[in-house]
Length: 300
Image 1 (cartoon, rainbow, N blue to C red):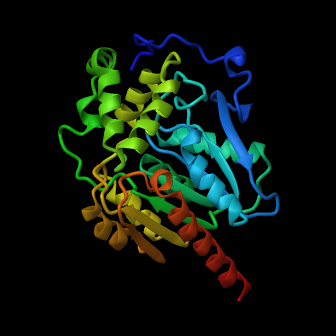
Image 2: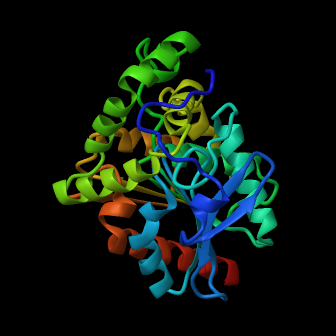
């Protein structure tokens, strides 16, 4: 799809607009990445991998809880999200895995990391685990995308035509994005907070282009083979799911278990699609316990 600037995208990401923003920025091979590496310096490092729309601020509640449990965190905004560059590239798993691999290498994080991926970020996490030379220490998947059957109306098929994709993005992009955000969170107050967080970053040029190019090139359904391959890896896996998830419904939980063969699995009650955002304390408890149990296995 040809790069475009949508109506309402009235700001440009550059050194001036980034000045004064929290966090750090690093130039990687595809563009500038916004990241935060924080928490106890001697803690195990948890790499947080976000979904289709979310900036690194999405993780704030979970980050605080993980720090309190002695874990160090690396959160970043994927290209096209938050305050990372809107690169003129194909937004597929290869792009996002390369971004993560380069960021980890640039920061000198040599030990195996604990990966936490949510929604589309779970697909990126699984791909990272399969492609990366140094296997992750653990893999946590929260409300993972990919198990809905692939249909003629799936976004990557519906938007296969660059002309149609560009037309839809320009004419209805912001409305479709806002509607998508409204289904993610069970609590209306949290839904408003999430929408405000995401839309603030969508004022930057190229944001809707990145969103729709991702829909075009990164399939969010029909990914059972990726799950099956992940289940065959020797990576301890924790599966988390919100009981009231309307984006990746909980009836996909059992098929995910069968394919992934996780060492632990939990359904989180009174929770929608974004468990790390909605229930950070409970999610942190599960992650910290899982990481600790892995260390005990290594010591035994």
